[in-house]
Length: 176
View 1: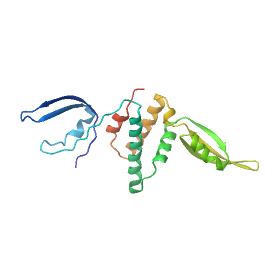
View 2: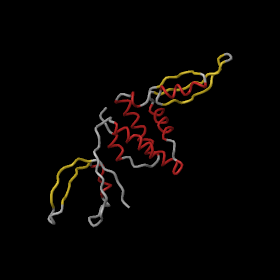
View 3: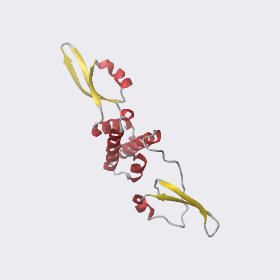
View 4: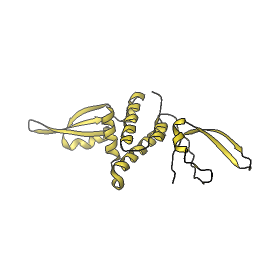
């Protein structure tokens, strides 16, 4: 069963010699290898949706969809680590963070204020105990360069899992 995702531009609509409607899309050359197995006698299911402009809500949805694919590739049927994969990507991409020392019961306050937090260690100051957290600002606060670094990190993570990232590079691509 052939299954592929492509990104392309609509070129034209017309009729063939049998008076059947034909639609032409122009796709990038990096998809050519996917098309070698197509057969004119096979009926294919085609789904067309608009790819959104760069750094949009749709791009964010694609980013989280890819994180979900990484989770499935790593964990199979037990996949449920999207948030941990996002945190791993923030760390690997060198995303902006700050360290905060808080009392252990204040962790929920950090979760409300920051996109992601990572427990680092517990520290004792006199008779008080504090937790040290890396508090990440997240992708919504990133500039284009930082977002590109995060996207490239997530693409690297997907590739490391053996996922085909050609489609994902197209839908997540934007100018730096």
